[in-house]
Amino acid sequence: MRTPLSGGLAAASLGLLVAGLALRSWQLVLLALPPVIVLALGSLFPPARPRLTAVRTLSRDRAEAGRDVDVHLVVQNTGPALDLVEIVDVLPREFAVLNGTNHAVVSLERGGSVPLSYTVRSPVKGDFRIGPVRVRSLDPLALGAEDAVLSVDARLVVAPTMEDLRRTKLQPRRTRPWFGQVASRQIGAGTDFWGVREYTAGDEVRRINWKASARLDRLFTNEYEGERSGDVVIVVDARRESFIGTETDNPIEHGVRAALGIAEHVLASKNRVGLIVQREVLDWVPPAFGRKQLYRILDHLTHVRPGGEWPFAHVAWVLSRFFPRDCLIVLISPLQDRAALNAVIAMEARGYDVAIVSPSPLAIEWRLGEQRPEDKTAYRILRMERDNLISQLRRVSQVVDWDPATPLALALRRIGTWPRPA
Amino acid sequence: MASPRLIPVALRAAPVVTLTVLLGWAIWDVSAIGDGRWIAALFAILGIGTAALVVSFVFHWRGIRAIGLIAIGAGYVGAHALVLGVQLVPALVFLSVLISQVELRILAERFAPLYEAGLRPDERARIHGALGRATLRLTIAAILSVVVPIIAADLAVAGVVPATTIPTAIALAGALVGVVALLALMPSLSRRAA
Image (tube, rainbow over all chains, first blue to last red):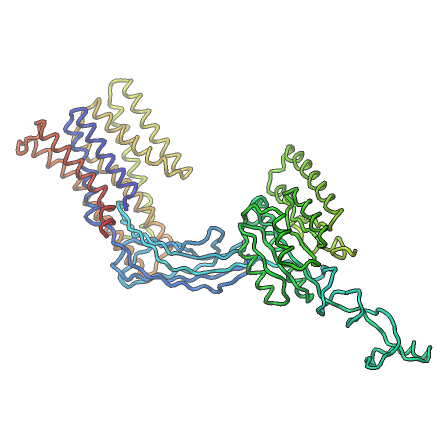
């Protein structure tokens, strides 16, 4: 490979030659020789073509965002000795190297090896590939270089961090026939007292209301409110227009974190959870119970990247075709699109319960901005517009205007039982 | 070989010292010109070069470092080609030192961090070897780039080669262009063949 220095020397030589001919000076023509001689020596001793192998090991192949992962790379020279070789283990741009280095310039003899150990951390979720290893054999005088790429890739899945929503009262209002933890307003198996009826053969003895039976001289049985489970569908708005802020601080990243927390909380309460993500494609996970479903949702959320321009109408269409009607829809959106209002009204009209968690893009922008006086005016105007939209939405659904700098649990707790009872 | 602690210091100091020598040399030669207009013009070129080098050093703008070196070289060559007359041996030495300065800076950028980072004994031996080979090549290149043109000039002046004819000048120019083009294209040709 040509280097800037070899190009510069060639240009200098030609320049002196042309100047010598133009000025008819044989001394100047002779001055064109030194750069050519240096170039010729460089060409006589070119850097050796690197032939290397590499093995990389990771301390873990799955990690939570913000967790450290140790990487150990061993590069071995299987070709000729290399006077000076530059080795770079290519990392995704989201990664930060905390300890050690992924870059080295060393001299490698035939059969020699060089270890590189370093610790990386990704502040954002994603399915990342570490590698390939890029190698450049350098001519110490910078007159040439030989490149090689070692295709040693390693996959590292970084999951989003999970919001702790354990104390949040978040549950679907309408229930399904399966046992769960949601009061169903129907008689059934549960712990909350519902009423008393006359004893019938087959009733459990422990359910007999002895006080009522003694008073009325007949046997009476307690009835309890049945606890059932319901369906929750989480809709994450990850469209391009929702990306406001930085790689780590934007409504989509915070929305994904909120979606995972809500999914975990609702699944732990023995309800079914489904997921719809508006991104480059409109992908969804049908509702299901349990730990496996949480991992399915986690896998989909890990791959969320801003993109696409799907209108909310398409989400409504997917909901009507592939999801049960009497479910609670949790829409997680920064509400950049005023069409959200019409979409929510349409969904409520079709019989869905809709609740909205809105990571505030204004709060994010305000934190990132310089907060000059003119910014304050703009912020106030935008704040009014957003408050206006949210107050209109609150007529038809429950809305949580969430500043992502505060825990989601706090924002949800401020509004009590969620969604509000009918 | 010198102490491992002295090597990075010497490597870092060498290009600075060489550059200072080059600049002093160019200023000395330009100040010997009698005509005030030429002095002003050539000092302006040298001033631009010095400013570019200082700015590139202070702000780490590598892009303008080349401008500084080109300006210093152009100031020296311009002074001799246009006013003072080219004296072959000093001019060849100047050009050779200018090229060596660039090479020394590259050696310092590549090897000094390795020594400063601390090396294991086996690594140190390998790096010593690589640095020694590079220094030897640089020395040979510097000597050849002075000696070869002097021999060529001697041959031409002695009349062994009729260098003053137009066909010889055209042939020499063509040969130089061919060599430079070949050297520039050689790496890409070898890669295509591989």
